[in-house]
Image (cartoon, rainbow, N blue to C red; front, side, top):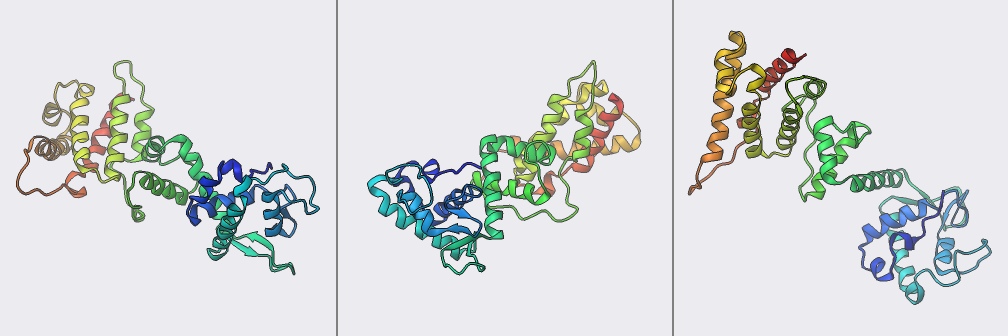
Length: 308
């Protein structure tokens, strides 16, 4: 494993000295981790703080060849050394580094379990940064994180929290066991598998994906309007021009009743929000107001059935 020197994370002393201890501590931990298997700072006993400082300052203390002759940060190295030692102390206080209890010397340290978990989290953040927040959010909403995010349910919840952090939103309270999205993943999977010589289902699928994103992010105006857009889009699948014709003249009594409920409730809610002028007093829609998940699932189930 190649050593990533501190300057590869923070190219200038001013950049390093301007960081708060938490951020600098995270970078220092990643820097120390890169020494594992590389000797010098890290050996069988763990990480040696004196060796770490000597490597930064390019002081030969009998540990083999140095990566350069001049201190890593030039004439600002004394300030950098002091600040990185403060960050080291912060890592200790946070329980991310600990002294090796099996070594008599006080300057041998190990990365704790919490430190390892932090490094794993930071590695995932780095991966998601490269993908971009839009792609990560879309993957979580559309596939449950299977395509790009990966990992356990805890990792996927971490990814949602990362998305919300990037969007300056507070982390969502974890969903209760058994809670549902507006449109189920299994139904979306069936839609994605459809093939038809008459219809291209890409817009239907994307409307459903965006419905899940909007509903999960508590964007209830957008949810109502996307439901209306979906209802306006699908009538030709049933050989009808408008959705009210589907609700009135397609299928059996049970299907008609469900579609009439969807037509009357979802469309009226969306129309009310779309066309209502600004007023002296307003209230905002809730999840209960726009949740037509059961009726939408019946509609999508019939689309899958008639297309297969």
